Amino acid sequence: YQAEGQKLLAEINIARSRPHQCGTQAFAATTPLAWNATLATAAETHSRSMANNNYFDHKDRDGRTPGDRAELAGYSGQQIGENIAAGQDTVRKVVDGWVASPGHCANLMNPGFQELGAAYAVDPKSDSGIYWTAMFGTP
Image (cartoon, rainbow, N blue to C red; front, side):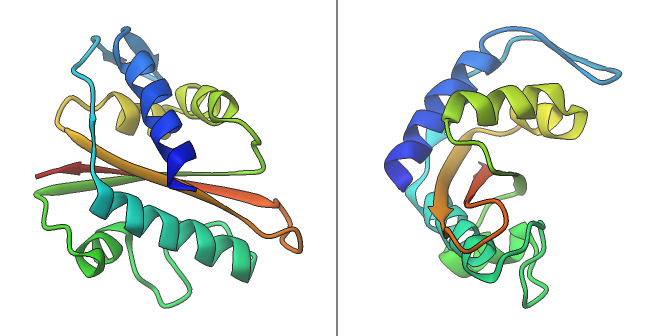
């Protein structure tokens, strides 16, 4: 599940290598993100929680935020961001969806973020089937 997360990182870095208009915000091309295994663990935990409990939200069922989950996984960064997606079956579709969404695009293009961890989880009994989480961090 984290192997696909690393493919997601590669697609995100391709997107970051080009300028983007994210809603009303214009972003210049920016530096690539580095993989962070701790953020990936936090991302996988959240994807699993959404899939297994059939919900789609940045807050988990215990009310934890992305920052809370990153800290619980052992990541102590200055800044945390999170993009989630549901239902898309390829990393390209996930990133294309995020680039088209102003808030997700702004996270993806934020030059302050330096690291990423991402993963997906599947539960065929859930409404969307597949759930993706990408956690952005600044150490």
